[in-house]
Image 1: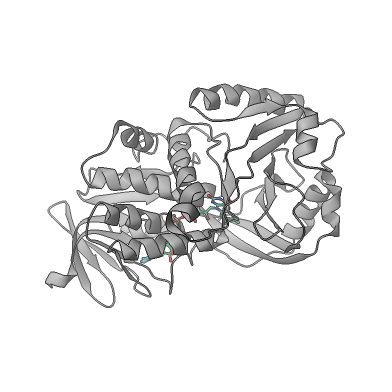
Image 2: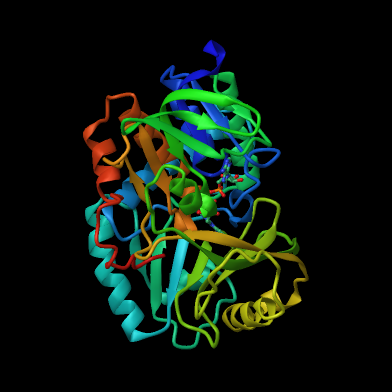
Length: 385
Ligand SMILES: Cc1cc2nc3c(=O)[nH]c(=O)nc-3n(C[C@H](O)[C@H](O)[C@H](O)COP(=O)(O)OP(=O)(O)OC[C@H]3O[C@@H](n4cnc5c(N)ncnc54)[C@H](O)[C@@H]3O)c2cc1C
């Protein structure tokens, strides 16, 4: 039984659990990651299109993502693996007076929190995205330090680093029970074994609510279906992630960029939302998104789509994650409800959660978690979901 004793057990080797394991192992905590799938990133991590931005509307996400961006941007130089990082920036082109007003208001908050972001005029937008529709273009917000990377290359790089630092990963081993005594976590049970630990972290993504039931703690996380697609590769012709926030017929915003291999990767927010865990692609997604993308950038009509897929945002009612140490069960940690941003939040949140578990959180670590408490009203709305 002694070899089954850990400081920390993480449930889920995805966008959140894997970089957290790396941060814990860095602090010399004996860490075990239990993952139901056969390898890292096989849940929602590999459904992400790879967008990485610190351009949010609140301090916690901005600070966590600024940290993440540092990790992604310097990864290859520091650790040697190519994770497909491109510092292409994020561009929100604006075509209506109201959107201009909303984004300019937000700019004040974002700049106040140290983000490198500004309003640019139509000429700059056209230079950043050659061929973008010029009619009614008013300008847009531009954050040049944001970027993109491959979710699967990244999660595997984090996995290898975590293992090198001493973390253990068990695949095809789902957690079936979270064990406790007198209100204190003692470990977990899987079909294969029983493991003891002082801390058990729920990083189970779209399954987070069901996993949290095992600890007797309710979390408002529901899977929300989103589809994405990827084209054949082309020579590079634009750098930023383009986010069009205007509503469409059956959708809210959509966003796309050209990845490190030259493929256009794109994603759409359906309206009304599609709740549930049905991962089958639909016949509605491609006509809706391609119509919108081509009207914004007619040159895209020449590219063939290679495939589409459907994944799940682990959604909370207000669009913010839940990262907390619930008082109801000592030693139980929630790192869930990442909505459409788990890939970009992963490394930054991992550092903040690991610092709390190690008992030495900095002021900024505390500030990051302060915005993600379980005990909140969930009535607000994240402006840049
Ligand atoms: C179409 C689409 C596009 C997206 N684009 C972006 C983007 O550009 N940028 C971005 O930041 N985010 C994006 N996202 C969101 C991102 O994919 C998620 O927020 C993120 O992957 C969630 O991370 P996670 O670690 O919580 O969940 P996951 O990565 O799904 O990891 C959870 C893991 O827990 C495992 N698990 C569950 N239950 C158990 C159990 N009982 N025992 C053991 N293991 C268990 C699962 O198998 C899974 O591997 C996108 C999502 C979709 C669907």
